[in-house]
Length: 139
Image (cartoon, rainbow, N blue to C red):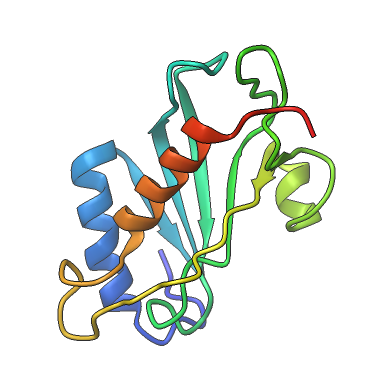
């Protein structure tokens, strides 16, 4: 495990532990976090996906940069509207079997002194879950 170019690697490690307490195995390397068992809403063709989160170097001041789920996900038999298997995001990550999910954190408020009193990785993951629940499907 390395801290890549992150300005606050200890903070990220603490948040990874928080996420792990909810989702089980979580891996952190360089500027990414991999959640091995992210639960999907009931309307998807799978119950669990890997979730890859790419962090900007100044995380947590800035929100996660990109979120990826495994390829092949369908919601009620359709491709979610904000889920892209063949475009957007990092092409090298997509080649490894991930699809980019378009989610934007417009009001990200991290607390420099407390990871639980401001936005953190768990908040981002919960926002993704909510977005998936309400993503209607078919672009």
